[in-house]
Image (cartoon, rainbow, N blue to C red; front, side, top):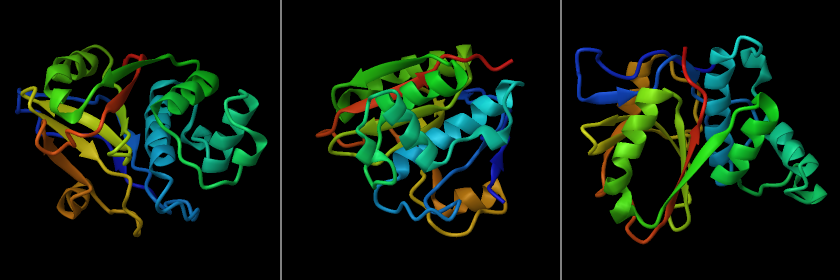
Length: 208
C-alpha cells in the first residue's frame, strides 16, 4: 500500500507554509511499472492527482491515472504522437497542467524560474500559493531534469521536497520516509542548479 501523507510539519512551527490536506506518495515502480530513469514527472503528477482526488468529492483515489493513462490523455489532446503511448518518454510541468485540466477541470499556473540562483526571488510566490490554495507544487527543469514535488516552504529559504526517484517498497510511515532522504528540506538556492531553469506547476484548486 502506498504511503498516505497527512501532515508534513510540526504545527507549532509557524515559519512554515505547507500543503494542506492529504496526498499519496507515488514513486518509481510503486505500481509495478518499471519507470526508473524517466518516470519521475509522471510520479509527481500522480501525487498531485491524489491530492486533488482527496479534495474533490467527485473523485476517488482510484481516479489517479496510470502512466499509460497519462500518455493516452496527452495523445488524445494531440500534444503527443500515437507512438508516445507505452514509451519511456518523460513529461514536464506543462504536460502535467494539461492532464490536470483534462481529468479534473483544474487550472494550473506555470511559473518559469530562469535559473536556480533566481529561485530565492520566487519563494514568496510559493508561500502565497500554499497560503491561498494549499495544493502541492510540481517542479521540473532542464539541466536539473529530475521532477520534484514541493510540499512546503520554510522562512522563504527552504523547500520541502518529496522525491519520486525512490524505487523500493512503500514506506510504512512519514518518519521512515524522512529518514530515507526522499522527503527533506532543500536550501534555496544552494541545493538547486544555477545552470538549470525551473518550471513550477501550481494547481489552482483551493483546499477546503
